[in-house]
Length: 372
Image 1 (cartoon, rainbow, N blue to C red):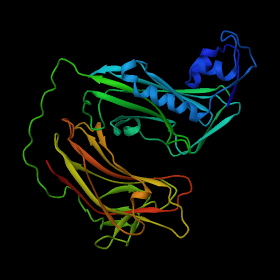
Image 2 (image 1 turned 60 degrees about the horizontal axis):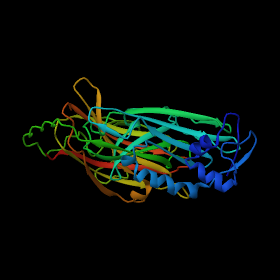
Image 3 (image 1 turned 90 degrees about the vertical axis):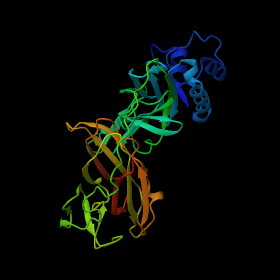
């Protein structure tokens, strides 16, 4: 890759933009005086493979070095993630900045399926604990963003050091990833590490709840009751279809009546704080002749307080590879301990199609029980 020097550029600023050292540029371009470059000069940049490993090494030692900024080049874009510092205590907030710059010599067009442009995720030992987009909704609108050479976009968010369930995370090193949600790029990220350190104060212990009932909390768990072929009587949803391809009984719910639109099926129940709930359901992927499977099924639990405010979320995700074709399979997961202000829980099945998808997902026999 090459870069054409622009007015105001220095070799140091170019190196910082690409997430590499100035010495790399000096050696690769045979620059005699690193303090002298001129507008229009062509600078050769190491390719993605050359840049990726140093970024990984920087991430591995970030919590110790205190340098909270990491860059990576992806498809002509320089991704940079920055936090306001590298160490935090409970009660403090992590201010995250994600910048993407077109560092190529060509115009880049980024196409999006929704109004979401970015996302941030925090992980502990590779497991997701927080996602910025969890309590947000985005319009389903295909749009294109044009970035000319040298153009940048910057996005910011704040993490309050709570997990998806609304509880403070434990002291440890956490990886924060920034994603550009454009098509074909949404699975690629740049990441940095932050360290959550202990404080002198002690976290109060949670009261031990009384034994909970083991009966199914959901009404119409077999999805047998429908007002018409697209409207379940007890459950709520959109873009769903009553189907006779049931695991048991007469009917089940097919998500994706229109296979290229998002579908949602959900039910809200009373829930108690400090409880753990288990969800079991049967699901399968319905394949079409010569159809394309390109979707994600998300099974989520949204947690609300008595005022109706969203205070947490639990969300394992299943991809087409995890759902058998035209054959039911049982899935089970638990919620973890719900926040202290829990009043209601909403179980959601969200079918998110991607470009070219033709297939659907069928859900049946859903059980939600209290296990502790």
